Amino acid sequence: MSAEAAGNGSGAAPHVELRRVTKRYGPVTAISDLSLSVDKGSFTALLGPSGCGKSTLLRMIAGLEPITAGQCFIDNLDVTDVAPAQRRIAMVFQSYALYPHMTVRQNIAFSLSVAGQPRKVQNERAQEVARILQLEPYLDRRPAELSGGQRQRVAIGRALVRKPEVFLFDEPLSNLDAKLRVQMRLELAKLHADLGTTMIYVTHDQTEAMTLADRIVVLDRGTISQVGSPLELYNTPANKFVAAFIGSPAMNFFAIDIAATNGHTARVILPGGRPADIGVKSSGDARSAELGVRPEHLILVDPKDPGAALVGAIAIIEHLGNSTILYVDTPAGQLIVQGEGNLAAKSGQSVGLRLNESQAHLFGATGATL
Ligand code: ADP
Ligand code: MG
Image (cartoon, rainbow, N blue to C red; front, side, top):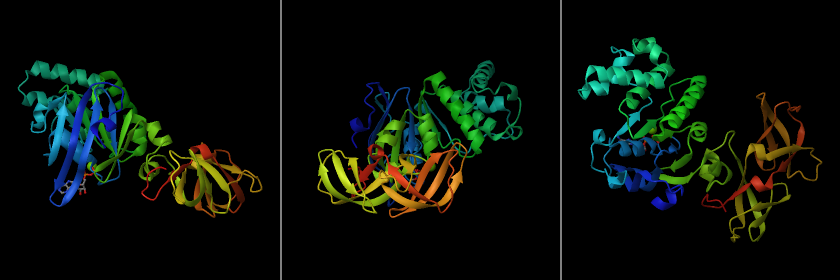
């Protein structure tokens, strides 16, 4: 994808830009000819499964990892060969790596003390950062006397105190329990709103990316699979990889035959024989494809309902309170269906599934959305 194609088109100034960047570790190509432009003040998430190259990409932006080919720009300046300390960038890692023998105040002020700033300045800045991160009551404690969330806030504080122009986060919440993760997520969103600093956030967790970022870059084996806002990726995935990665429970996929295409509509024949009309970008000549439909776009109806696209039997029911997840055995395989919270349904029960055709997607042999 070109740098332009990877931009978000908002017209804001690019703050961080990668041009045709490749990273090889010996025979392993971690990042392959990747171009990306990140707008000033944006919150961008780099999302993808383990090993897709997220950390490598972040470390190249930070200057911690030499770039094999291509260039990195910050504020339109080529920083490809500039040392990390000169990049006005701060990075927060999953492992907080706090100094155990130092207080919160000393941990936060550490980089200032190394830089030879006067004690008074160190204390003032540490105080200010502690206020922003609500760490003031803990300034004189040591890391062992803090909760996981508080430790992570100290790690963020250590980065914040340097007044960076760009914040890089590498899975900073992975070590926290589920409840704390949600709370820290809100705090990070607030921090971004308050500071307006450019933030680039690496995660394998699609919920984290969807809730925090205004723009998500989905990575697949060292290349960009798609760039877009959370809802763009959710509603119009460019390919099966993105469709499968975004959304929980995950999208259902099954093979269908294409009977005819007419402009931007494909008439498909579902397993079991019923037809459905699915929107496509262009009428190609494919005769078969995979249909993708999210669990919330399969609607439970009576098995005799003429609108039922598929008929099946409920295998498993999960009551989550706010929704019900059903695993339904159909001629298209076992499909995940999301119903309302108070659904009265029994395992073994025969059900019809109506397909929300306008929300279904077709994927061709290469995985690209048709
Ligand atoms: P992610 O952060 O998305 O999980 P990484 O960026 O850590 O992925 O790794 C991307 C690929 O590069 C992986 O195949 C990984 O094994 C490889 N890799 C990362 N760091 C090194 C290294 N120092 N030496 C060799 N291979 C590496
Ligand atoms: Mg990583």
